[in-house]
Image (cartoon, rainbow, N blue to C red; front, side):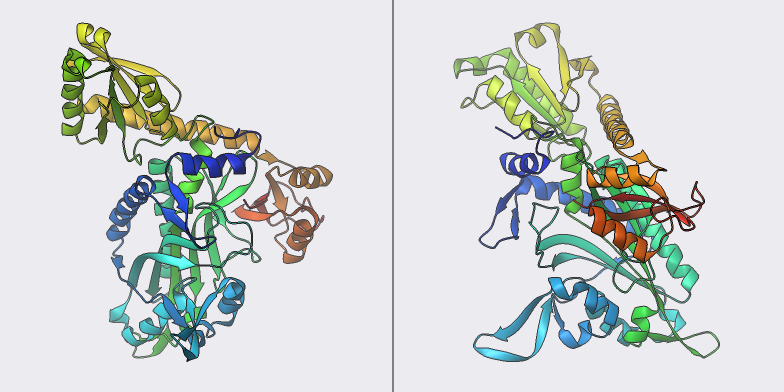
Length: 475
């Protein structure tokens, strides 16, 4: 039994991830095992992102997982932001190392050490590299599958440019790419904008972000892209000779997403019966269940028709499973594939054999689509997939729209945040004000949405309002 999502989202989520065979606990607290069903989804996301960033001239590389402490300390703000979560290697066998090595919390420092050796001239720019790897941040809070782990799978891109304008444009472009893929592939709605000074990435000039909202009102960051300015290039002496034969420091960006995305997708779409997966990222898009109960039934026409439909769907390029096993009843299989979130189910019995018409049941909402077997086409199934992706996104967006309130009254704003209700307000964008709200409610500004607030004064402190922002607690 899975706990009720509406009553206890955290317990529901933890149990669902295990029952759907996505992840398991390892021997180390906060380090989890990615099982094949989940890893397939990560690979699909990876392929989609790779295709888009290649168009921007980004190449893949790989840098070491260990970072010398001396490198990590070169950018002061950066090391201060990560020190509480850094895991250190201090010994090799019985020998104490001369210098400590950080287990990669992020790769700016180890990569920029090399950038300083590789970049000499304006002809070497722009330099755009991405790596798919793991990173370790020793979370002190309660860990959760995908959403808060001590080891995460992710990608991190790092680019260097001649000018500030080029770099900031690149940071924004990468956020646009994330936006497109997260909407089209995972059907996740979000708020896009930038982080406040208190919440931005350590060492960044500007952090751009995508934030989504869960059913319980908590917010989750699902993608970030940072304009780093010259903060790291000056710390690591990354310079180039410009067209006028003068030395300049490069301007940089970094951008990343992680398997956290998949956790957000699971929470946003799934229900008390199990996973609901967008068909574009589902490991198995269609499952066919012939109505058979014994070896004798295997000779019936229902199995023959099931195999024909299976081969047809496979030939169209879609992922499909034919379950003709006898160990479990058709009813048990219905529940199992509902739990695993397979987007479309086709049952084939005597009725389907006689009519040569099948019903495709959609996991998302239980809606049934009928079609003659002879008319089943790639175009029909592709349209069904696109329609389902769109409707899943629209339903999730409508739910978020109901959860988030625009607030103009100070007392109401405070009361709602204390109740874990996300709000959009006109805000002064001052660190002191944000700290006061955090101390009072536990909420922070998740994303600055607009530089033109509706109200003239900050809803919290009464000073001049400078931005419109989403405030919420972080999940």
